[in-house]
Image (cartoon, rainbow, N blue to C red; front, side, top):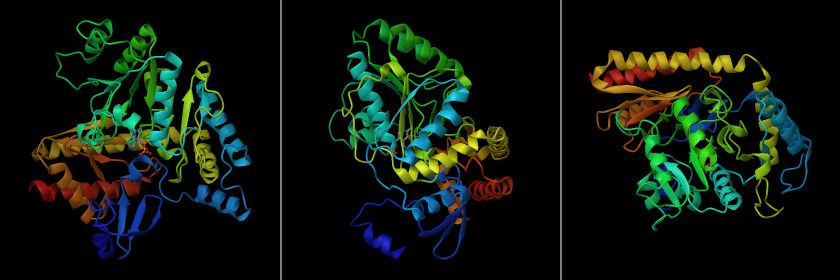
Length: 415
Ligand code: PMP
């Protein structure tokens, strides 16, 4: 760690929350340079939903590299790209009767969000985008402008324009209907603001504190968007790829977004890869109007193709749902058995956590768990939530071992 303590004054790597140097990882386990083992309930903030170094993906990648497969081909056709696209349609879009065109926006989450915001403006000829309190969409100017976090926005040092933040589901007290607020706004009562190009939302806000919108709320947002001819963008960068129990987080709500943003766990192996799914009639860009050097990485295509094969197994989703229930039951029991937490369970699927009203307690529990060999993160405006993001295919014994560490950590904090 010494080398990092020294480097921290020169580079800003922000590795202080997990003060050790990691050397190795496999499945849901990580090891540091002293050989200490950790259970990973962080999963690269949702970039490692299938765990670390998945053996099937690793094997495919080794074979591809050994055969001198194309590494970088910019926008040229390559076998790896073709196989990925074929698998994406066969395993994901076709079985769900989804009619989207796949676009490569650039390598990361913020790139897919930028492409969605830009396309929505071009298609509608309108300027503003509606986003929601505590939403998180990325760190570049466009995605930051729709991020509902004043601390992050301050990082730009200038006012961020062309976005309007509306209250997310359950943001206000029970007597206040957040979507009534949105409708009043659109009807112009008091606002006088132009109709926006798009609404962008996460179905479960990850960075914002694991706030899960209800299906009814999402359906009503979709209805409002249709009524006003506003494009609905679902940012599934964190909540997608199985994190909430289904491949797309919006499947249980039965909504059909016009644009979907995917990244993080798309490659399955922690390699950068993003796609923007667009309604076919929105495909109006001329070739070259949106480009980028690293749009689609061939190594990521190889691992992504292998990752998508998991979804062809009919039992795969059932496995995630079973583990989701185990985690929810465990967290509910923590809230009940340790009233000192002043906590409640938030989230959906394996994107779930406990929000504690006791200032600083969530961070203390996470730090204590880390010292006992479990990695988890905090979220929310005041880091008031400790969040559990285990791999979606974690085995049950590892899950239970993680629960034990969390309970021991809570016990030691509230005694
Ligand atoms: N959207 C959401 C919902 C995210 O959680 C994130 C990253 N935490 C992003 C966009 C930005 O992704 P990236 O960091 O890969 O640019």
